[in-house]
Length: 508
View 1 (tube, rainbow, N blue to C red):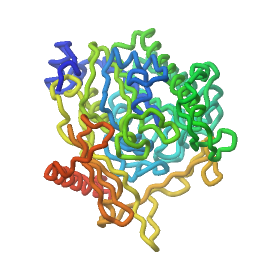
View 2 (cartoon, one colour):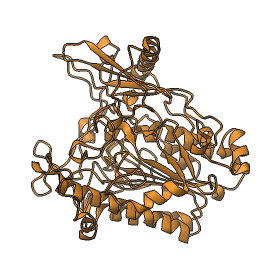
View 3 (cartoon, one colour):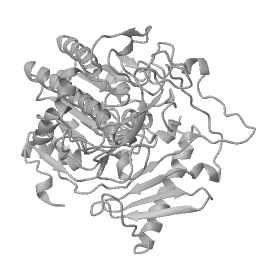
View 4 (spheres, rainbow, N blue to C red):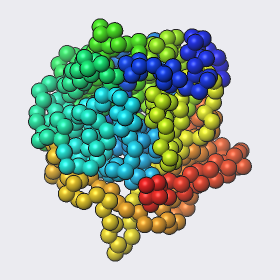
């Protein structure tokens, strides 16, 4: 790896990292010396949709500055190409198929151990703001943010737009007037101030509703994109109408004007967080981490340089922007091309605050040795799998959680079966059958990526890409490296067996 891609030169921090983890710096100190942690997540924000990644029109000055001053992760992946599963991976460090969060509409399971629970045990004030999408946010839900370790929450079951309808700590939903990103960041800043006054470190999760469709934005943000070229995105796309909640066909250029405006508004509010931390003398010892939950959706795909988009295990569905700032630990700007995934957040934060990893399979790794240059490659491959609950004719799966506890309460603009709220589900998995291994899947080693699909006739289709040289995944090299492909597939299958055992409940 080119040393210029990863330049972390503060000797004292480097020594601490080499000795095990950054957590050693705080284990013997007072609770107040623990770093504050803020996790920021964009909804459907693809890899190229930032200025620092070379987008020709988007304006993201705050993320650009974070990329220039902090750690820029060029090869960051979401654990899933869709939102709910990735969110589960962040909280648990585990692939979402292990607990039945296969796709949007599937909840997490109550027995999962959340990073919020561990940080709360370590003395943190914990709070969630924005999109939850791992189960209902109402008080009686066994998978609401409170059940997962967040002392306070102002959250939505799914995504939200302008004037969001949110539930505070599980109470009846209420309308909060204003631009969606601005609403939740103001609330998050108020919580940080309260925690600071109480002398507690804070763990704040801000999961934006932007830039998920349908799009709505403030006039000042829309005006930034009034002059998009007439030949840019000159095609028709389908998305949700804010007026009817039903699908509508529109010219993509107008859609992207609104999408870009939402991203710029989100970027601005991230700047509010950075400004607050600086004004309160909290910035040095606060870990601020932003990334997206999956790739760009179809209606927003105009400049994606990768293959396919949201929903796919090709690069376009799972490669997302990611930047991190923590001046006390990483004062020198850095860029890394090591493969990183959202499941790595959990074990990394555990290492930082000195919390033990639960005694169950965890799919992420501690990233501190990568950030410190102790290792220049990922020690094990990343696995992706778009699994699904088993469907058998005449057999009704047993709900993991009572259906009435899975009913959502917070409305959104997009109707589903004529309903503005969303319900969730999760099922018991009694055993393992050959059909359970199906579904689009991939394994990403340091240089090669194996992608496996089942065709409609049941045959298996395999592709092998050297993704660092071929990020668009155009050249299938499986005929050139048959043994490598065979070894990667064997490793992927062994991992799937572990995942299915977890799905059966063996980890609990």
